[in-house]
Amino acid sequence: MKNVYAMLGLFAVAAAVFFGLRSTAPSAAPAPAPPRELPPLQLIQRTPVPGVTGRIDHFTAFPKRRLLIFAGLGNNSMEIVNTFEAKVVQSTKGLDEPQGVLYVPGLDKIFVANAGNGTVKVYDGKTYALRKSIALGEESDTDNLRWDEDSKRVFVGIVGGLAMIDAVTEARVGNLKGSGGHSESFQLEKKGSRVFVNVPDDDSVVNVIDRKTGELTKWGLNGVKANYPMALDEDNHRLFVVTRRPPFVMILNTDNGREVARVPVGGSCDDVYFDVERKRIYALGGEGFISVVQQNDPDHYSLSANIPSAVGVRTGIFFGTSLYVGVPAAGSEPAQIWNYAVPE
Image 1 (tube, rainbow, N blue to C red):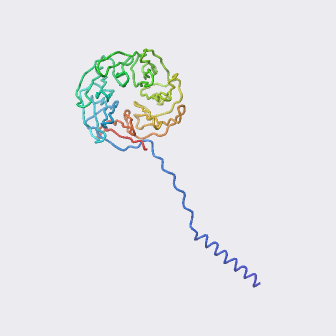
Image 2 (cartoon, rainbow, N blue to C red):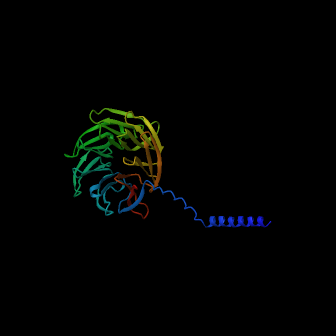
Image 3 (cartoon, helix red, strand yellow):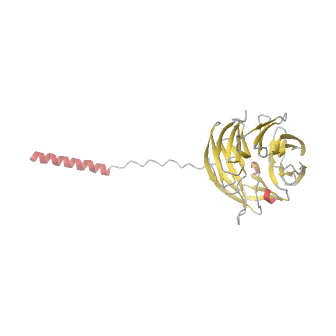
């Protein structure tokens, strides 16, 4: 019996040592938390634009001087904002329903399309003095503006097609005829001669016009309506058309006009941009958020995020690592420019 008790005692001591060591042994370090994923756009700056009322329309920019220029459609003004100093440096009033604006760096000129009286006004880029007023017709409903570096021409969206202005002589030099209706957003090929034009009035089609020959082709949108903004991924032969009824970004193959994909986005969109470096589409919806669509490859797309903005934010401009949007005045809050940064 003594041997049995002795053995039991040894087992007890061994167990105590074993469990004691387990209780005092350091516990394993907790697994590190996964890195927090940043949203694709982050609001970093709000710049007030006092005295601007009503709808804010399209933008242009001069990044070297850190200037944003936008059309105050409801205010009949052109506003110029220094984004570095976060203040308005020029307000030109007395315009007539300005919609499109375009800054041409090489000539240091600002072109402003006035829908009310069908003119394009040309301003000096340094003094902001009026250089010339070009009449395109009171019924032309002048709107979006685009620059073609090769021909040194400004293209103007009008009823029935596009007008062309020689930016050097500041004279109208011709038209490109579309299918009818008012031309909304359009994009010029840089490596080719075509221009793609949204025409919601003509049964919501895309006009494809050859700038050299004037040849016109019409692409349908498979039943969706109200195609206003447009962006182009020329390298991958993809055209991004945003519709309002219902709200989609429609991806078309520019070789043949066929639909590649469609992704739901925010409604009442009036501007869309393609971020070439990050392969993203930013659709500015007036319902209060910016839809970010990821291009996984040229044939596949997915909604990445809906970033909160404000009701009525429909227009803006993207360049570098910032998306600037126009926020209309509301209540006691003045109109503002919001800067959304793209995290690096």
